[in-house]
Image 1: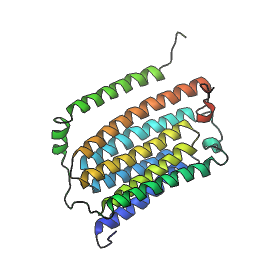
Image 2: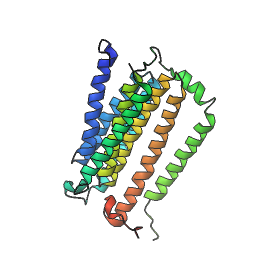
Image 3: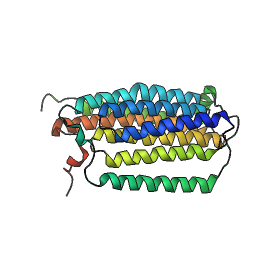
Image 4: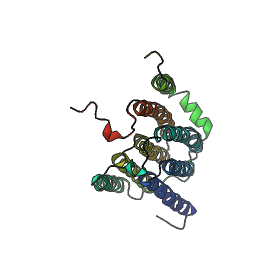
Length: 171
Length: 99
């Protein structure tokens, strides 16, 4: 990386923060802390996306993930934690942790090797800010069928969520 | 800024998410790790959209966000149902279908 550019310093800070928050999310013993560390991860991810020129996508991440998904997670934690009691039972016991670390490490090594082999130090274009109007033109033009399909997915998820979580009186 | 630094960061986040999925016992925390992996994919989509100067990356990132929201809703409803029926949200105790 070329550290004479301000963008690379911003990237370095964001990368350190997002890595630390993600690792805390998967390793903490406190469930609520895991959800709150996910907030930090998502906020930093939104910052990285905005840095890459995706202003609309960045703010959608803030709205949907931090605003809705994490609140849903907190509700899920509050409801399911009641009888778990001891917080030590959050992870698998034994050498599962070592095996998982080996798998994740190998995956990271393979991804890094592939990316470095393929792209090396190919530079991003200097100008790349995507305006919201471009996204709208594309979304309601070329991608209108997938957009409608996603709206059906959301409708099905809504109905499915209600059906699953509803308490049946008659049975 | 190179494309590799963003792609490797996405790979790192994805690997951390894989570790979380494998090591966590509580089903809610497994779903949380899956969200980490989806975020990694979003960062990669936007980064490669910028690299190839193509808007499709960001459009598909929005689709991934929508599907992730639906997935969390359904996933938590299922976890809630399992917890209500079995008083446990641990994935290793859900062996009803194991032969």
